[in-house]
Length: 242
Image (cartoon, rainbow, N blue to C red; front, side, top):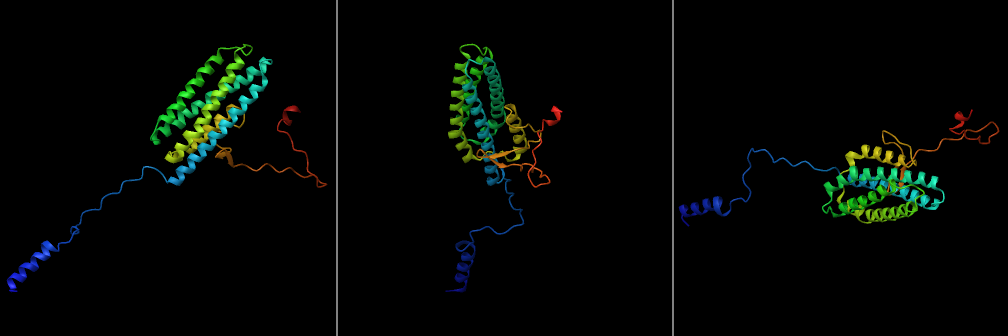
């Protein structure tokens, strides 16, 4: 083959036939990677499991209070009035916590908002029954039946929330991790409304995961007397009785 033809083929091979597929390197800066919009998925899952545990513990407290109120009956109107007012206060606090602090975060994460809307509608129906109870006297013949209907409706709402909303939130991993200090404080105040846990401005106290206490302070040691037997614990109210 003549040199001229061989040279033309070689030049075409270098420039056209065997041209590299990647562009030549330049001094251009590398593209900036987008920042992650959420925290570590494990951290978010742990935060939601704690929220779920706190909600489950609150559900258990409310159901226990309804069970106690149902055993009082309409014969003891004074005790029934106290139990009813305590229940209504606990329900208002719990509903405000969920609608004002928990559900808005779920709206940002869950793809299907229908589950949250159903829960909010159920709360609206419960609040209507609570409004009726506010206008009744404990000795009214409709007071105890209305309280029973409210308890049955609340039980349905809590069952639906645990079976549907909790499952959907576990899959979506809502971003509660940066909000946990504030959420713990709100749940501590909510628990204090029913008198089952001390309120704490900093959110200190028992922490829950799946309805169980995961951190709990150790009980104080009972002092021993000289002969080796354990002494009697001093009551916190002893100072008021002297």
